[in-house]
Length: 66
Image (tube, rainbow, N blue to C red; front, side, top):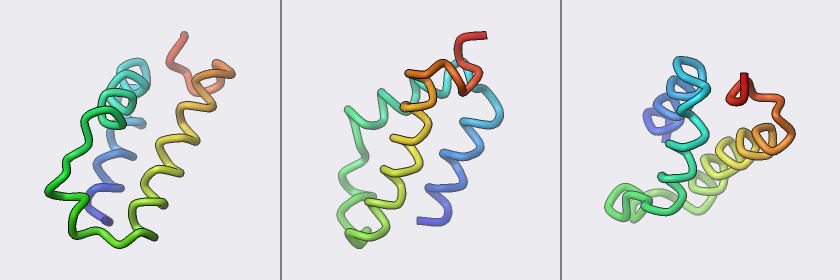
């Protein structure tokens, strides 16, 4: 999960404008093979990071709208 979390954080930091779209796409597509071996706690932690960013996008506080 650490590698997956690092990738998500890197995407958010490196390109905030596309970050929202990439996360939304990832939430729809999801890599089923990767998710198959993750524990429930690891999946939930990753989703919290993504949902937190998307909620900031909704409030236009993440920088995606600048």
